[in-house]
Image 1 (cartoon, chains in turn red, purple, brown):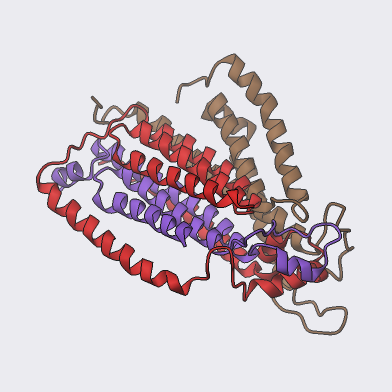
Image 2 (spheres, chains in turn orange, purple, green):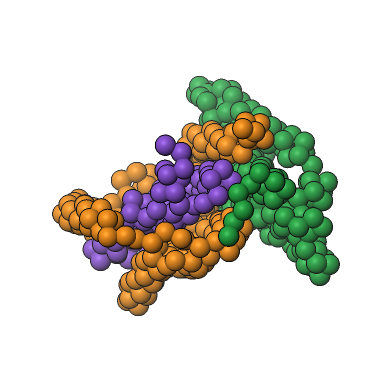
Amino acid sequence: MPNVDMLLYILMGFMIVGSLVAVETADLLSSVICIGAVGFALGIVHLLLRAPELALTLGVVEVLTLIVLIRVVRTRKDSYHATSRDTLSIAVVVGGLGVMLTLAYFALDGLPRFGEPRMLMATPYLQHAFSETHLSNAVTAVLLNFRAYDTLAVTAVLFAAVTGAFTILRHYGRRR
Amino acid sequence: MIPYILCLALLAVGIYAMIAKKNVIKIILGLMIAEYAVNLLLVTVGYRNGGHVPILMAGETSEQFVRGSVDPLAQAVVLVSMITSLSVLLVSVALAVRIYQKYGTFDITEIRKLKG
Amino acid sequence: MKAPGMSLMVKTVSRLATAFVLVFGFYVLVSSHKMPGGGFAFGVIAALAMMLVLLAFGRNVAVTFIPRTAVAVAAVVAVIGLLAVGFLGYLPAMDGSGGAFLRNFGDYLPSGSPDGMLAGGTVWIMDFCIGVLLGAYIFAMLTALSMFHSRRRQDPTEPREE
């Protein structure tokens, strides 16, 4: 399917433009909505890259994210205006990012070419996914059978996040 | 090679937002953009030209599956990372709400002025 | 948050829609062995359904629909289920080889068919547990955020926004 590549580039370009708009616009509500658009474009990219599981989860996660962020920023503007003092620091940041991107470009040779994955670890998983676990879906087999320790660790991370959120938002300690 | 470069550009946008912006919400958005970029890079590395979804089709043998499927490991890792990034987002939103409640602004330069 | 929630129309529609959203979540959960989806997708879909109730009815009514103790008990049961699967892996396998933590002891369970619903030995148990746990955790965080919102509006010492 030769058209997939072109569609992929267009969607990725849309994501970059959308993120730039989200970062640079002065209205916080618009930038949050731009992030929503970027997230749904990412969902379509996941579908193109043959990852429907990720697209399904990302769609739902994106809706949750959008609701939470919109409720947080209701009618509030980004009041900060860049002064001439900031020009130097922004230039330093952009220069550093340029250096990072240049180095990363040379490091890309170490990655497999696009469309030809190496799959050293995934080949045995794919071979044994059906014969050992009776699961047709290889992603579920990897997630919950071959790499179940990862999933257990994620529950620990989630517990830490819940504890952190309740600690940050707790009632007591608010009185001055 | 072009998809990798586009992913890196997206990552650069996210890091730029995290470092250069002075608004807490913008910083959170930059974090989200960087997470998107990294997830996308992982899935892109696992893509196979003309490959199919990592689900065994009816009547497909194991060898055909190995040769025809995209990388399931990258997708599993990204799925886990997506859930983690959702909880990280909720915690950082909690921090932002808390900052707004205490200082009345999302602007980190104002916060620096208010409390030494 | 406004005290009585949203309008009657929104409440009625969300009461109907929540059931469908949850049914879709369960479909995604029980068919995860042959279709895209699984515990993580079920967790976020269930959290979204509960978020719908939370938004439409307001927090004070929503906590009577979804009591906090029920969410906590569900999370605890899910964690116990995960640990039980982990430690039952120490059972020696039927063919005589030794056990290990989190081993898939599917040889003791009735083997589901790949075309049916619950295939894969311990995989579907872990899928259920992960899904319930994720839904409970995310809902807990969302409730904490909404509680903070409603409390902040009543605080007279809060700096006014222009």
